[in-house]
Length: 230
Ligand code: NAD
Picture 1 (cartoon, rainbow, N blue to C red):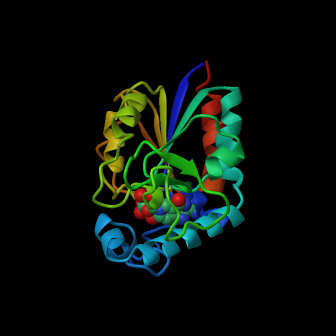
Picture 2 (cartoon, rainbow, N blue to C red):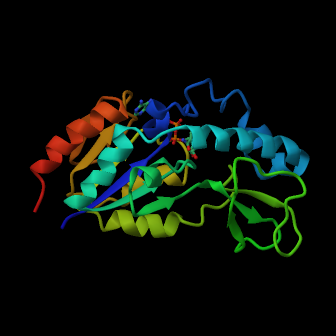
């Protein structure tokens, strides 16, 4: 079976009711990124940061995977599919995708501020001041904040470099290093980009832009892929 690597951003979850990040003047759900999603923000006001992610977690738990998430899960019947996502929601997993790499962390998990190998699944929607790891230190959201290293990026680059077909869905390709992943796709392979506003990627060879929302675009993608099966 051919390897399909799908790189997804906030746009794939838009039709599940989760807003994209650039959709609202660079604000994320009315918050400035510097106030809620950086190490400096955590240092300054832990309660505000926890509250921001508690809201995001609740929103994620109440959202449902849409037909784009489900369509990608269905592709596993015919292809080896790996989803590399910038999203912190768990809609790919809930749609049934079995290989999901989260570049920017997972909203449903917390991690120790003392020992980053201690990662826990959060029970319910809230993480509070005073919630501690087994070594007694405050728990933080298991999220890669702006300005932090992206530990999964090397693994992701390796996965993209072995793709037979590469697909980007709903990413503005503005947040680095994640956006640089597209340059690791082998030159000769077909590359699909699904987005109502196709980002500037003119340098890519064998590009097939699908100017559509994720739900409509994945339907079109599946028709193209029928012709590319082994
Ligand atoms: P972005 O918000 O920068 O870009 C979103 C892209 O999605 C844009 O190109 C836009 O044209 C496109 N889009 C909008 N509606 C769409 C639709 N219905 N179907 C398909 N595409 C659509 O997103 P990004 O590039 O992923 O970067 C944002 C950062 O913020 C990420 O690092 C992510 O961690 C975080 N974030 C995550 C979520 C989530 O987990 N669902 C939501 C917002 C932001």
